[in-house]
Image (cartoon, rainbow, N blue to C red; front, side, top):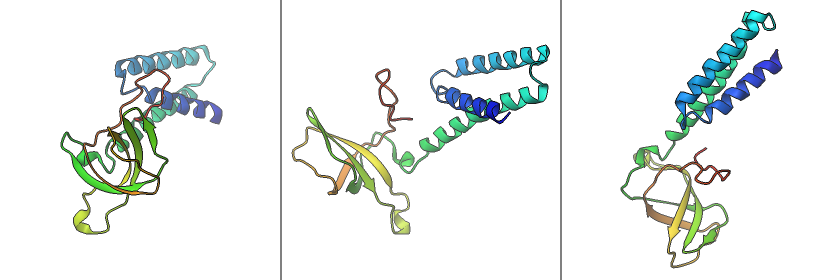
Length: 164
């Protein structure tokens, strides 16, 4: 029974990862799963109680994924995401990556120490610097003025999903 519940929860997590993209399909899949479970209940292969537990674990996994994703959307930078540039500073905490006409750094922005700065951003920020005029090194303190936006999902099929 525990294996069945675990599999259901994992399947719900898998479904949850697709919710932002195709919500109508998720509803159809959940209805299809309910139909399959009802079929097994009517055949006597699965008791009604076990069927409800499995369906509940699938829905719990789906909601857990959705709730976890919504928390990320309300992270420490959510209140300042706009088209207007914001000034902040931090330390380069990962190796600097260089590309054609750009440098990509990950900044560790410290949590503010004073109450008046409580609205200031803190955490990790990936910064892309177009047309850099100097090189940067890991561990170097940096101050930037940039537009902050949420990371986009997979652009290339099978590529890394920054949003997830």
